[in-house]
Image (cartoon, rainbow, N blue to C red; front, side, top):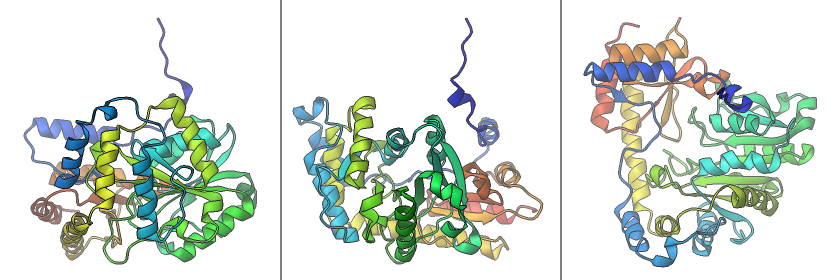
Length: 388
């Protein structure tokens, strides 16, 4: 019997990290101590009051049945209240403008299913979260990469998008605070995005997963600016803010038609998020946020150790303004894959080659601070001893 993968899977680009993953396995078998700064997965536990809320909710027998795809009313109301208090985005209708997600990745992946037809053009940041491009291709859309350049603060130059491309475009993805560049966007930038979107009838999908992981001023929401709710939707996650990556809970808010379209997909592909997890999420976003401030303090301390240590060693490090990511420019003569491989094999430090986020990531590797500060300091020491 001949078994073949579907063309949409065969057309995916090669898995860039396969060689590094293979080397990680080999080195661990040899007993090598690896410091993994490659994955954006918080290493600290979920706050105790959130865990307690889940434990209590898990005994509530009505939560043991199928949930609704759109989410519990209490969760959607809490999300709307969060947006009002944190961003000043008031008047969100919990029934029509908020939908629960099984983690924001689920919503981001399913969103093109609702709005992108075969042949539609989607504007994708480069470098950017790979799911934007992957799911565009899964539904038969065309990807047009919009380069994010260091000299422009890793913001897309909307005026440089060719007129014919802008007129064809159906959807624009934006992501600030940004993965992998750790850049921020201003309200002025979001105003330009809204003007661009309304001029060309383009849907804007904003990925705000890292809104609470920042080091100075709180990042704004795209939905704060006038006109954003006419053309846009925003995806939010509890994963990074509350160390809940394994819990798979998030939500999307914004234009009612866009939320409804995503909801229609969800009715056909999933059965909603476990309601006990939603109850715990309500506890997370409605309780005092001391745990979030502590999270920022810890990441700030770790990031300072990483950035200052590598800068002292002569590396070109891009100062992160948010997220727990940091880009390091490749030493002369090395590609991103080469640099990541040498960090792994010579220093025992796992990094992510940034070209895994698109061609525009070539020239950098990404490190995270999702490890205890002692291990981060040790990683810096190992890297400084490398002969590059």
